[in-house]
Image (cartoon, rainbow, N blue to C red):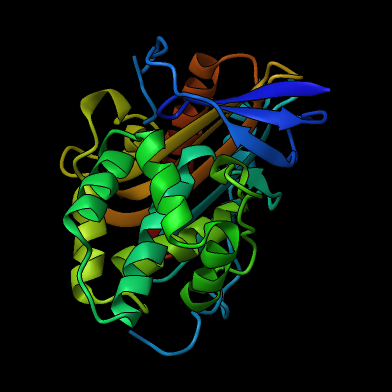
Length: 307
């Protein structure tokens, strides 16, 4: 049986052979043309590195702060939804987490694809071509799927992503099969490791490569500036969002990753969610979870006088 997986973060449609569970990858076979329409809430379009060894877990010597109590009012709304949240306080290295399941990336994988491209370019001793830079900008800032598919092929698809992720310290991320980059599997904690490679100093990515990704993530189109930014103070937020509608279940995956400032502290944050009845509901839950997590974690850090 052939079904269709619609990846809405830039609006690409993939033809898929076999069933689609809504929670796990389905083998991709071909890609159809991308429809132009934009959905309602965000009108949102979709709105994701120099030590020689892979980065370890962000806080190997610390126990993560448990966000479950703070998220209880949000998870009470879930129904069949699943969610995972991870936060890293950049200054202290303290972590806060909720859930450890793996999720479809949808378009947050675009940050990982660009990091891989830049890492490969560094290895080759070259700068990105004019075409690659145009595709990278469209991929991150506008979440353009055609540009993403071109760069996915350029990096060697899933195997190329997986090889780069070993160097970037991601241990719980598996590249999607064939052309379907949007069903790459990841965890919230692995997304924090990716963000560390983009925003931290201890990274296989060069300073110039990191600055390039950061700049694109700070300038996503306004309709895509939702998600973890809901927890941010006024000022610059760098983020990438993703969403995916599963055709068999008709449920949505909605994800958001980025760097925010909250009550004067800088956090790296990832919120992954699936099983939503609509994109709008998913965005609302992600934003409520972001605010609740940031408030609780900041209160915990202040209570312990962590600086």
